[in-house]
Structure formats: structure tokens, C-alpha cells
Length: 552
Image (cartoon, rainbow, N blue to C red; front, side, top):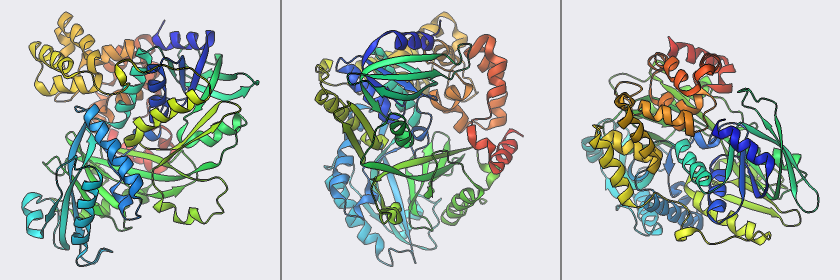
């Protein structure tokens, strides 16, 4: 019996203090925080953990410098403190990164806009408690010298400031909270869809359907809990409606698209520009690749798809702002990232606020129905996740669930530094290079020791899945047993970022062996299901053509 099947059995048998619905960052951090405080917690996610909004971000943990323009200084302070806390708590996974913002002549910032932006960057640095390196004001000549990839023919100057980014990817960061929650006794299940919750005056009853199709399909569980936390991201309103919950907030959805291309600069800094629509636009390091975006398009459905218009917008903007040997085209695109941002507005808004939706911030709101012990989480972002966890714990205590202080006083963060040293030293002692050893630690923490035990028993487990790649066969074997992988995409896109950084034709060569290790007898079935990681977007004609081109 797999770990996932054991979790389904456990959900069907016990009464919980709290059921968390949704396995994105809000749900994952809620489950981890509650479990660390002694709650009996269950979490169900109708797809894979981190499989919606939480895997389509820009991979940045930033303090909200864009909100300086709208004078939301309180929010900026809160996000800066949250960013600083993530850097302290996750020094391997969340690192300070320099951002080079180039200001073009004729842009809305005008001839001396970079000077004003520099003053703003100094204020941003101060609001952030001087935690990062000091901003710098750069001339055109300095930009050309330090970052020759940037086109300076239209530039008036620039600034360099600091924020942070996730070294690996957003989805694997979410998975870390899921693992922590499970390690502390939470019962977690992916591909388990809540069909709504019913309140009987004392407790909630939630019908949960197994969507895995792995032999136990169409099984329906009955989960009972004292409290329900709705952390369904852009689907919060849908689940609330199924459960008879009315709220004061709702979401406005903004689609963001990134294109992943071969690395365009050798430096580790993020390149920032103002796109043609005035929005901040980034070139973000992603291993040996660069992620370019993002777009900002109002949509009505969470099932967003990248369109040819999105692709043209990204490519035309970046080609106009970089000096490359040749312009980037769709033939250079290795992968796409397309998701929605759930932005919070009032549920009774008369429509005026919708007209200014591009100025809405990524704040979160937690709304509580105290009579029926129900919590709904609206909005939010990766940077602010620890605050979401804290607030959910406080609200659950307020609903009458007795909790206890987290062991050691903290429920998040990497293990103590000596454990990292133990993992890295042991890995290098087995012949792994430092980069592979550090990567194992970032992705798995102390769980990497299980991979190293596999390598000790079978040195072939130290081979990379892709030559020159970052994932070892020992990690594949570990995932097959302990990571609740149901689909190939779960491993390629969220447990790792292989499908984001490896060209599809190259990846296709190892898919049969990967599937065999991950799924055994189900390998051929899962190979047929796998669509190159495009998911529903593959139904779009443009996306299908792009997938065919990448697969050759």
C-alpha cells in the first residue's frame, strides 16, 4: 500500500481538528503550522500539491517594491519583513539577489526618472530594515560595463537593489511545507477532491473523491472535522459556495506568463525593465536557463492559458531591451509558465475597483465564519506565507481548538546548520560534487540522507537523470516511495524542475526509464497520460503547436 493510499484510509477513519482544503502555498503552510502546534490536521488537494498558482510564480521572494508607487508603505514593510524572515529561515533555498533595473528614455519615468527611482530604492532598503545590500545608482556606462547584455541605446541610467529569489522553484518550496506537515502527523493527500462541506451544528462533514485513477479511482471518503480551512486559491469562492459559506471578499484574476529560454546572461542578478505596458518585467536566473516575464492580463477563469499574444509580448519586449547575438524566437523557448494571481477585492464592490485591477496588491485576507467554524483564505503570495500560517493558527485557536506552542518555538525553516554540513559532507564523501550535494540539501533537507543511503547501497543511484543535470536517480527512487507522485508531471514539474529546464526532446529520451522507476507496472499508462507538462493548456492550438515543435 502506498503512502498516499494510507493517507486516504486515515482520512476516512478519524475525526480531525482541522481539514485544510487546497494544497498550494496557503494550504501547505496552514497545515504545517497547525500540525506543529499539535492539531489533528488533514489536507486534501484535488490535483498535485503546488499544482496551480503556486507553481507559476516568478520564483521571487520580494518585498513589494512595486507597491512603493501606490504608497502602500505598510504592506511594503510587512512584505520586506516576511522576505527577510524567509532568507534567515531558509538560507539555502531563499537567497538575496541583486536586481538591475534599467530605465529607458521616453518611458513614463522621464529623463531623470532613474534618480527618483534610486531615492525610492533607498527608502525601500530602509523600510526593509537595511537587511540587504545597499542600492546603487548606475550610469549608462556602468550598466554597459557590468551587464553588457543590456541594451543601453535608449537608457538614461539605472539602479541596482536587492530582493530575494527561490534558488530552485516555487512548487518544491511548497512541497517542503507539505513534507513538514506530514512529518508532524498531518494526513495529506493529493488528487483528492473535496466536493464541498456540510455543517451539522457541531462539526463539518466533507465528501472527498479520489481522482488518482491508480486502481482505487472513484473512491469517496467521508472526512469529519471541527474546523474547515478553505485554501483553494483562485477556487476559494467555488468551494465556499459548495459549502454554503458567504464572504465579504472575492478574487479578481490576473494571468501571468513566463517563457523559459537558454541563459541570456552569465551573471546571477535579475534584469528588470519597464515593459511597454509600464509593468516591471524581469529576466530571472533559473539554473542554466532564464525565465522571462511576466504578463498581466485580466481573466475570468483560473484555467489560464498562454496565447500567441502573450508570447509575442514577452519576446518583443525582451528583444527590444537586450543585446543578443540574435533575437529570441519561439524556437528558443524550452518551457512556459502560465498561472493566475488571485487578487482580493470586496465581494460587494460596485465594479469601480475592478477598473483599477492592475494596481491591486498581492495582500491576503483571512475571513472567518465563527458560528460555523470556517476559515477562508483570499489572495496571498509566497513571500508572505509564514504570516498566513501564523494567522491561521490564531484563528483556529479562536474557534475553540486547543493548540500548544510549537516544539522549539518555531514551526518553519531549515534544520540547524550542522545537519546541512552532515548531508553535504556525506554526499561529497560518496563522490558527489558540491553542487549536487547542495542541491540535494535544498530540495530534500535531512530527507536527502535517505537518497545517500541508496547511493551507498548502489552507486548507480548517483548518476544524473540527464547528463549534466541536477537530479540524481537516487532522488527518483526516493520519490517513488515517499513523495506521493501520481503523474509523471508531478515529478518533472514540481518535485523537480526538469521539465522547465531540459528541452523536451532530450527529456523524452529518459521518460520510459523514469516512468518505470516511479510507477512500475503503471509506467506505460502514465507515459500515455503525460502531455509534456502542458496540462489543460495543451488543448489550446498555439500551445499544442509549441509542444509539437519542442518534441520535434
